[in-house]
Length: 210
Image (cartoon, rainbow, N blue to C red; front, side, top):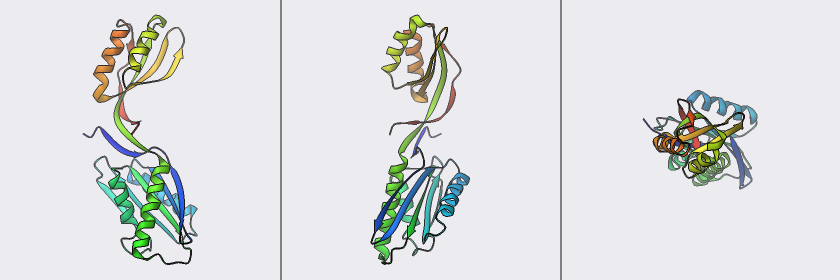
């Protein structure tokens, strides 16, 4: 089982103008082919008057599903170059649409490949590449007397502490990569004198800095 993959963190868009043609690149995360197709449909609906809405998407942690469309551009000049950008960046679970409004000047085969490649690249950058890693999330609570020592110990690891609340005890969510969970839990137990309470972990893919 893959424990990590690269994708984009959010929907994003950017645009460039080449020889008076306007190219608008859109990218978004897509956990399934259905999500990718819905994203593509929404962009096509938004730009119904565009000359072309070319797309590419890759789905699956092993990049097992790859689809693309030139949407009327010469074969191989739009969708496939966009796929190449995603593959070269190692991205998956990601969909990209590059919308073109023709400006009156023919770009030629090489010019189109470069334009759609650049349109895909700026879309990906706008959407924020991110590494998704298999993560354990624990709900933790500790006495106030242990908080400073636990926080200090955990801040020396790569674990993340979120949603801190102060009631009769200190409660927080602890997120750690599955591969580092044993080490992090040991640090939490040792620094609290085993007074920390940790729930059974919920395991799933979470974003971590690239």
